[in-house]
Length: 178
Figure 1 (tube, rainbow, N blue to C red):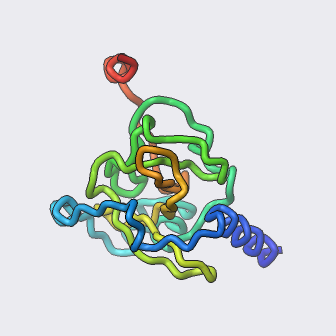
Figure 2: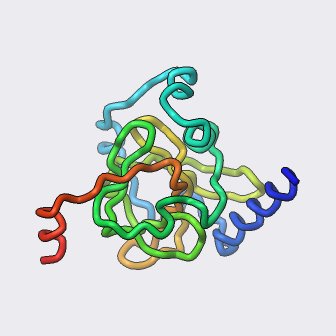
């Protein structure tokens, strides 16, 4: 049964990429090296991470796991606010950047500010993908693909267990509506 589940996840992940082999050569990803180098890093031992995170979060964020598609609490989440790294609280995405890609995981078309996300080639599971990690603690978030909507053409496909949510205040909601 365990192998069956693993096979299903790999098939869904492959379908989620729409057959694309996106890697760091994508012209759509704009990496700001200055912003990345200015991020204050959070460094902890693996034992500290184990104590801080739930076992499921540890599996995703530190061991580069993937949650089942369509199972995450933020997949259909519609509230206004900011999505932050579940490990360190780094602000990663705005609800204004979220869209329904239909792939089974929360999807965003851009990071909240340059330098919040670190990119790395991932060749696991027989695919070439671009892994996205929190630039502050290097926790695994998911992957980015170049089949997203305008204005970036990117789809940041994120595990719900890798993020938390900070609800927008009433004042912020009014400003966003104007």
